[in-house]
Image (cartoon, rainbow over all chains, first blue to last red; front, side, top):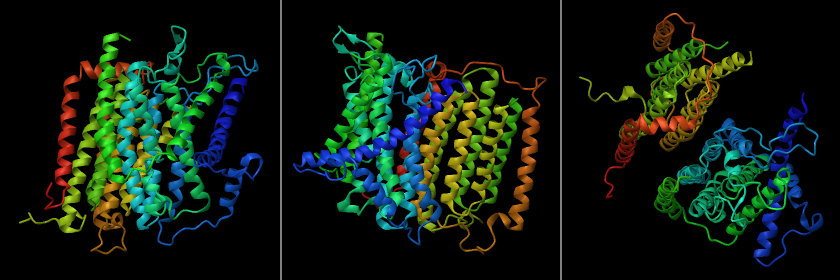
Length: 341
Length: 100
Length: 174
């Protein structure tokens, strides 16, 4: 039981709780930000400035009755939210969010702020993202209801279509970063050109960044790609028949997926935890600021852009985004070859 | 100590489970799934031998086997779909038109 | 020690899941159990110092091919097998398939084990080697195996076109 081992176990607990609290915080941020964008107030009564609103929501959800349609397949009905939620959390296991820190000298060697430093970390994130399709498709199927099945199939078709552009954008960053390990890619983005422009890959891969974010938004089923959950068209899509904590698990999964996509985008394109004015061991503060900026962008997009119709969505994914990402890959490859990076 | 033989025996067991599935089951989808089990068993053999010989060739062959398995699954399922539309049944015993 | 334990655990999961795949009536459960088997195999690849094979097993097999199977099973609303025959007896419990299948499987296992383990003198210990890097695999894939790589891309194109053509309904204009 070396101090490092204790610190690593503590890190896992901290990350898990931080993700759950981040999801809760996102509920509050979304509602207040939506209100601000729509020139109204939003929840302000529960706790100071409405900060306890997510907890009130959770308590309300916990007290609701847990329903299951009689014709639903019981095992799959119970399994689907578990798959969604666990894939959302598992994807964060390989995301680094800070430099080596010694916790103010409590542990002799540096504790890397990452649960597992796998040297194929990008592929692991992609693999777990492709597993999260099952939660949705099983939810849609096992509910044995028309709206659920339609929403589930549409949602999973959307997710597997946008996974291709997601993977191509990752491949372009791979070419520039020359490594599959997220820690290596972040460490290559330290420093600045001419002392003023940070060496972030967003400046080398602007199109790749946009493609990655678009595909990420589509992967997490957020607006403007949230047709499968559209309240106006499909009741509630694949989670129509769910109530109480199962419903809460789907929402938890959605918000944690948003956080993971933003965290990976920060690591790949925005320089991770590197930033001016702070020492390496406090880099996680910069990381949180950058992830926060991307989450703000997510919420902003949801309440500003109208929703894509499903066939427009699929056409965009296959006929626009995928060719763009292939072109981006080719141009990146040519650039890497020419500039000899 | 896990030796190469352990992996080969495991792969042999998986392969024969897949073969038994192809023979015993009378549902086209389950037959295709059993074929996938057999392909996975051979993948395991390739990776185990690649590790034992210290070459990366095992993983490369696995890459190609997976690609071919994906293509075969896609075409096989398309055939299952079009055949199902004619006969409304997934039992291979009901497609006996060519029997004399 | 933990190595052996992990091998037996993952191997047991793979074997039991595969047995259940061929034993389930409901095709959806078969697909999900096969995904579990693939997960166990992926763990075995990691134990064999092949992280690339492990990850692409999850991405390609468990994440794409099985989704395809699941879609087809759902869209066909695939009936449980043998709806026209007696459904009270489980398909594997009927006298013919059970005996023949079990005998065949056991014979095959014995043959394969004999063939695979008769490989010269050494007992088959793994040499102590480093994890093969993805970079080495990529380099080999694009230089030594470049021709099969290009051929598989044509193969996938042919499979895509074939699947679309085969699954089209009769009488569609496009």
